Image 1 (tube, helix red, strand yellow):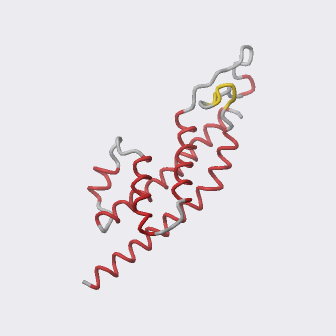
Image 2 (tube, one colour):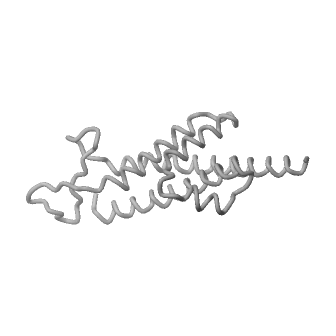
Image 3 (tube, helix red, strand yellow):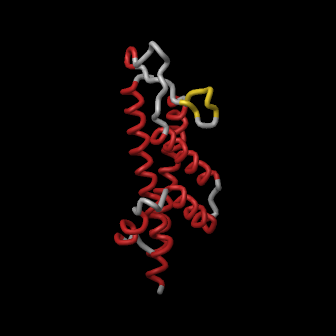
Amino acid sequence: MKEDELTELRGEVIERMIDIETLVNCIISIQYLGKVSTPFYYEVLYDENFNLGLKISILSKVLQSKKPSLKHIENLRRLSTIRNHFVHRGTQFLSPGKLGENGEVGIVPNPKQLDKSIDYDSLFKEFNSTQDIEYDFLKDLIFKMSSHKKSTHRKK
């Protein structure tokens, strides 16, 4: 894979995971505050120490009361892992004599199998096959939660 192709894939994965994380933030805020609270959203959920793994763990608690499949949580964790590969696994080891010839990227070792490289094409395909499904699921969940909160609020 050429370096510019990898850069493009990396950017797409990051941007689409930002969208997912935004939806997760909204769900957490609605669940615990009844609405999306700007101070909570930016001061708590946007804090650099409030990572996506923690947010997914909180989301799994929210979803327990909603009774959906745990497959959504597994999928979100996998999407996060794929994102981490694109974001944090950029060190390339180039073979001697092949220092970036023809724009090719050197290998990026797989942290679990150092003798193999990360297959970014496969990871991107896997990401694409799951991301839209989970994005739509989270969007629908926000709509249901918001509708429920409004109807509950009107009954009081």
